[in-house]
Length: 512
Image 1 (cartoon, rainbow, N blue to C red):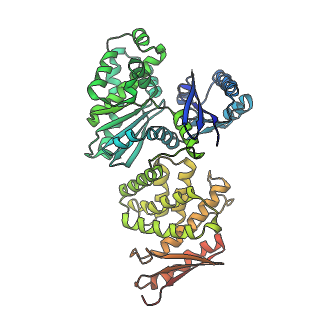
Image 2: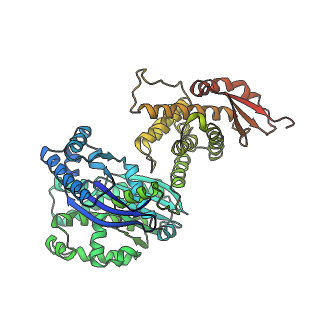
C-alpha cells in the first residue's frame, strides 16, 4: 500500500469537523489538515427530535465545502460519521438522504458504544502512556454534547462502561430553562452531575481505587493546549487542574474568550465541561489527569489505518469487549466457570465448521459474548430465562458493539431457550437478512454447545470436533457417564441440522 490520503468527518452535536490524514506504511498516520465549523445540531435535536430546514441547509452547505476540500487534497477515501445529534433525530433517514443527494457525502450513524470505542481507540493508539495508566485504576471520561461516557479500568481490564445523559449541550439547555443567575451555575451543575455520578460510585466503583482520569473533550483540551501545549502531552496533577479551574473563576466570558482564544459561545461549554471533570476528580479522589486532545476524527483515522494493515496497536481491543461482557455476566451472578466451558465448546464447533457456516472473526466474537451471557436472565427469573436474558443484553451497553451486533447477541441468547422465529412470520425485528442468518447460525451452534454441557459437569470441555461430509463428530475423552447428554441431544441437534444440513454426533473415546 502506497501513500493514501484519507478524510475523517465527524458530524457532531456542536461542531462539524474534518481531518485530512496521510496514511503510509512507514509513517503510519500523519495529520495534514483539520477543518472545523461550529454548527449546533444537538440543541434542536435534543429538544424537538428534528432539525429545522435552515439547519439542514447549513449542514449541507458546509459538507459541500468539505467535499470540495477533499477534492483539493485528492482524497482517495473518506469516512463520515454522525453521532448523538443525528442518532436521536426522528427523521434521520430523510435528512441523511438529503445530505447524500445534495453533497455526495454518505454519513453512517454510530451507536453510542461505537462512537465511544473510536474515541477510546484514539487514546489507546498513543501506546505506552495509555497502557501504563490502565495498569492501575483508571477512568476514561468522554464528554460529548448529549452524554458523558465513563469507562473504568482495573489491572488493564475494562471493568464497565456506563453512559450518563450529562452532555454539555443538554446541561446548557437545562440551565437556560431555569432562568437563574450566573452565580448559581456552579451549584446547579454540581447537583445535576452528583445525582448520576453518585449512582455510578455506589453501583460500579464499590471501593475501587481510581488513580487516574483520562479526559476526552474538545473544549478543555483546546483551552489547556492554548495555555501550554505540553499539558496535552504529559500527565497533570490534581493541583494543576484546580489551578486551571480557578483561572476561569472571576473572569468574564469576553475575558476568557481572549485568554483562551476561543469564541465566546464556546466559553460556557468549556465551563460546563470543566465543572463536570472537577466533579469526577473529587468524587473519585484522583491524583493524576491526562487530557490528550484526541478527537473522534483521530479514532476514525486510526481505525482506517488499522483495517488497511498499515500498523497495529499493542492493545487488545477484543479483550476489552470480552472483559466488559464477563463483568456484565458477573453483575447478574452468572457462573464464570460455566460460561467459560460453554464458550470453549461453542468455539470448537465454530472453528470446525468454517467452510460450512461462512462466518468470520467478528461473528466468532459475537458467539463468545452470547456464550458468556447465555443465562444472565436467571438473575430475574428461572422460568423465562431467554426473554429475561434478551432484555438484559439489549438494555446493557457493550462498548465496541453496534446496536445491530448487540441485537444479534441478544437474539442468540433468547433463541437458545425458545423456538426460533423465522424471517417473515410476523415478528418485529430491525435485523436485516444477513443479521438474521447470523442469528440462526450462531443459535444453532450455541444450542449444541449447551446440549453438551446439560449437566454443568464439563463432560465435553476438552472435546474435539471433526467434520466429515455431512456429519460433525463431537468427541470427548472424559470418563464421565454421558447418558444424559446423549438422551436429550436430539432436540438440540435438530435445529443445527436444519441450518447447516450437517448432523452433530456425540462420541466418547474408547477405553475412557
